[in-house]
Image (cartoon, rainbow over all chains, first blue to last red; front, side, top):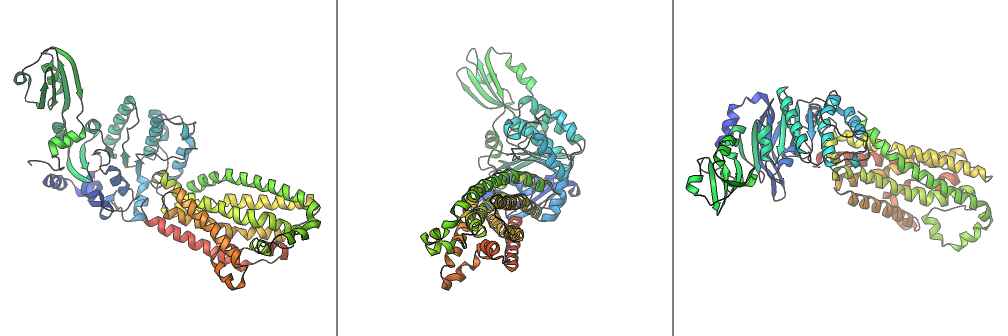
Length: 313
Length: 260
């Protein structure tokens, strides 16, 4: 894994990095929330920061914003060292941030809250964004649903047209339709030259929108790779319920791994193309099929080993 | 960059209005009572032990100045309003940190110094509202019952209380940047203001121990001296103002260096 990270680093053009983490470490007593994390986020990419809940994603983000101080190591955001408070404060004029927990002034209406942020950093794209994401602006925020709060958060994060936007679990609480809209919006923003740092614990989401991904587990960066490589490692979790018992040898193809057959039910992880899987399955008499995303933990187990390190590389 | 000052000022309006209403009610009560009991004040003065008068700095109860100083300023203004300002001060930072509002505030190109100073600046709302409002209520109240205050003394009792209230607020502010949980910060600030007030009051009873109260803010604001004797201790107010500035500087120093 070490070699992998170093490879990516040497390939990248150092001058273009929008975010650069250099052995960034944060300890709380005995707990190491971030353990020597290093990677770069290039200008104009959507970088996915993937990890299970409690892995240390929010800690990294709060370090990048200067809300907490690193125990050792450092990072640069838009070229400014996060330990240089003054420089970082100025750089924030060009950063948007959507926190995981949205702390608005609950008594304000959505409009008043946006006015409040606009006074601190501008709002030239506010109207355009409010056509895409529509929180009820004239109601007070304390009456907002979780999804509406998140939409208000998205608008405030982008409304001053920043070069870099840091999103902490941006789609949690959004219905699938709005999630799709958000994903499309992020891709358009990326194509317009924005850099997006996107944390999530949902693999499929990261697979769909991100260009590169860093995987964090228990405070350590366990992988850093292009999304295509991750797709190969990811696969789909499939459960097939057949009308009759089946011969495992005959049913199994090369793309299936971890095949488990119990009577008429077959479970496996499928690493090939979805169309090929469906073509293969229709040859059998099926009673039920479930195709889902594997849990992150399972990916770790299969591809990075239980100790969080890449096995056999 | 005054966005925070504006929003914080708005938050202070409701509490200020409520407190003015409370002082209006209290004033109505005491002014309507005064003409009836003015003559019997010596009975009252004899009925209470002397240290109570020391503790609350009560003198000349049979004059309107002494009566109002004792009834409204000694307890409600010095102690209760001091507590109120400490309570607000203790909420300024800790509340936003606890509710994660501070994350969003600090994602703006705003320095932490500016956040603290704008929040402290918003204290102008209760300071102006209460000092103007209550001064007018007391002045008019006295006229209504056929008495009169020296307007300069009345203005001074309010003006010189501003540094005192600021010190109470700054005590809360320091608790607010040190402690993460807002309830703890408020309890600490309130406790400190009450204990210091009590220590100062008790220390005045025995001249040998008077020095003990020197660290308490209430030592430097004597409402009875101002109203009854028309003595204006500008030097003491200066000490309070200096203490306020030091406490705010400490709060800024701590807040700019800590994790939130």
